[in-house]
Image (cartoon, rainbow, N blue to C red; front, side, top):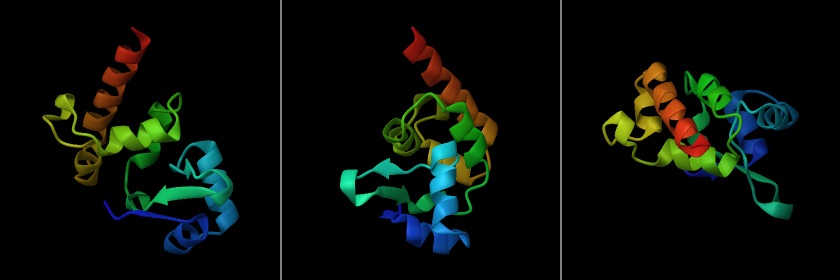
Length: 108
């Protein structure tokens, strides 16, 4: 799905500062997975993805690795499509329904 990039590279793609990328990661509006001492890896597919903020807010209790896995895994609620593919079509509500189902499964 395009691989990952550093905070500096993502900042360039988004037209913001590296500090703004870090702030968004801490706020939970960007997925950044920890690479330990090497910093964070940011999935490139996040650039200009409408609705991602709402999905990540709904997943605020999930860690970044779980968020990443959710977005890239085929989902029965989404008729075996990935949430990323559905979100790319602008179907935010469908992805949010899938998030709700995951949350209910975890809570059980």
